[in-house]
Image (cartoon, rainbow, N blue to C red; front, side):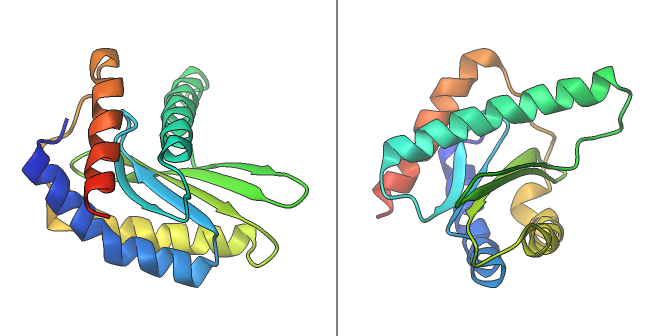
Length: 160
């Protein structure tokens, strides 16, 4: 778990690459969380409970996808994509030396899966190079999941 000062630095460091990702990929909603569901960056959400719901679900999807990859002897999972009638969702890992982050992007006809994948790769390279994510690897426990999620939401709410 990141401490408050580390969280503040990580949130600030993620703002420019996340803004670039949103602008270039034309996604409507974007969220970057850690494996515990702690929110590190977000764009496009109208209500905090939406952020909390998406963060919790994405963290669970991430954990399940990693477990399925291990069961099938896959070295990693690349991404998850669901297409609805009007919107699509893309969930993908953003590995860093500090922790494996998770990108959630929701987009419509103004974008495409290929565009989102391309700029996800660019975002991942940029975030991996940030000094704020070069520390020791993070471990996630079930007990810390809700605490980390609430801390991330509280921090993002306080900076508005």
